[in-house]
Image (cartoon, rainbow, N blue to C red):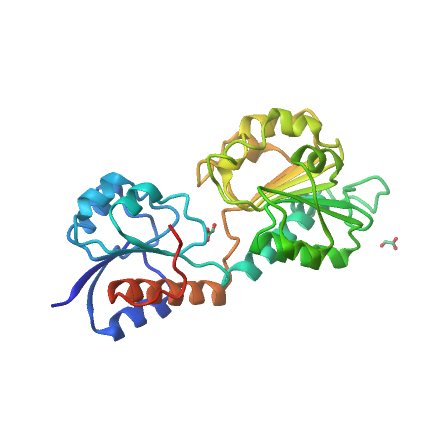
Amino acid sequence: KLMKIFVTRRIPPEGMKILSAAGVCEVSLWDSDEPVPRSELLKGVQGAHGLLCLLSDKIDAEVLDAAGPNLKVISTLSVGFDHLAIDEIKKRGIRVGYTPDVLTDATAELTVALLLATARRLPEGVEEVKNGGWSSWKPLWLCGYGLSGSTVGIIGLGRIGLAIAKRLLPFGVKRLLYSGRTAKSHAAEVNGEFVPLDTLVSDSDFIVVSCSLTPETQGLCNKAFFSKMKNTAVFINTSRGAVVNQEDLYEALSSGQIAAAGLDVTTPEPLPTNHPLVTLKNCVVLPHIGSATYSTRGIMSDLAARNLLGGLQHRDMPSELTL
Ligand code: GLV
Ligand code: GLV
């Protein structure tokens, strides 16, 4: 008898091919580029043995109850898992697969791109070319901040944080600070200095948030945090929007407390077009595209499918989350 799988969105074909070639499951797909409505999610999971979901799907007790006792494995097409109610999942003995490592390079590249775009004001420059604001070469126009000789602080020197540090160092970064729960042995690869968060915030010219969203990091970047930053410092977040208190960030940016911010993640997502942060010239907002290269998304799809099959067949999962 075929096992039932619910896939909550169209995903790159790599994963779908693996699922159908396995011949052990009957796949039902929310066949859209847009998120599955909650009611359809609750219907779709009924009786499912496996769930392949995205970071935009909130998988909580209600969804798990709707799925019922068949559900053995949840595979998320993401490295982040703050959208999964881990305690509830653990209680029910469900295994979880995710996609670390395969998106590290793409996400680190995007972070560097966003940092440079924000610090050197690329979106503003592009806009001026389009709207006729480019009247001549001006000594004082569109000046920003450079990495050479700077101090960079990375909050969360995990896989992605380390990859970001490695890419920033060749720009001539002088000091690389990081903070987090514990010192990391891999920090030696980038001469990273483990410092208290306060030191990182006050000493850095560029602050990059690359930690996971947990109760500890929720709202970490708030009024007190921004008030300790240099007025010339640039703030970058490519982890999760909820690490930042956005009202406090808006205040810091609009008052000149900090120089600029680049965000690939926000709360909510999507951020409404009339959100105050979107109106600021010194805030560059991207639509959560850290892992968005063709090849990375294909590999994520492949890995998510193999995670799901491994769990369904009581085998090893290539990337199983330790619960
Ligand atoms: C992206 O944010 C991910 O968690 O994969
Ligand atoms: C810039 O183009 C310069 O020549 O200084």
